Amino acid sequence: MKLVKLIANLGYGSRKEVTAMFREGRITNAQGEVLYTDDQVTHDQIRIDDEPLDPPSGLLIMLHKPIGYTCSTKDQGELIYDLLPPRFRLRSPIVANVGRLDRETSGLLLLTDDGVLLHRISSPKHKLAKVYEVTLARDMKGNEAVLFASGTLMLESEKEPLAPAQLTVINSRQARIIVTEGRYHQVRRMFAAVGNHVETLHRSQIGGLTLGDLLVAEWRILNDADRLKLFEQRLM
Image (tube, rainbow, N blue to C red):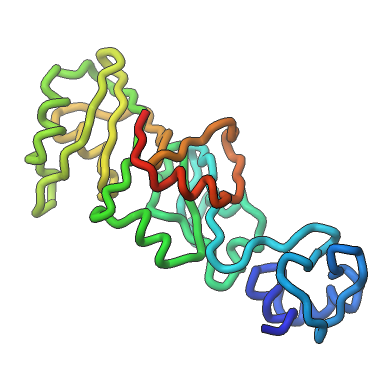
């Protein structure tokens, strides 16, 4: 692939804009030597303004999503892409969120440009555990853990019962819940089904991957060790 197309596909600009970057001497190799559009050089040797290129296809990003941001490219208001470099939205294919966290839910959100990886993470058949921290409007009744674990709970407008979920009670209004599906507003609807209301919801873990020391609104590109950890089923 020619350098102009490669760099444009990574979202750094249109082909015209990338060509202009070459003319301006902004694209160099790792040794600081100016590159030209017809040069033959490996991906890891390319620098733009002295910074390495983002990884090629298969990029996986972790974002600590704040409350108030929507998982969309087009909705009005604040979007998760506002927290990321513009090139991620312009990348071809786009870096898309893996599943969704609703506007009022915070926590661990993954994004990737790899459709196969996206499906592997989000598909219920892979049973990748997602851990949520919940604060409720009312005291729990005491039978929620048994009901959620039963595999018989039906949500409104659904035709299939939920897969078993694990509820750990922290106190009468706080709990940790582990689910392996990703149905629309699932955790909120589970508590609504037992007559309660979720006031705050935070996703703290996917598989064996946690936010670690990543602060709210921060993001980072995940490495091979992170990917291995992601597909571990170790739970908090």
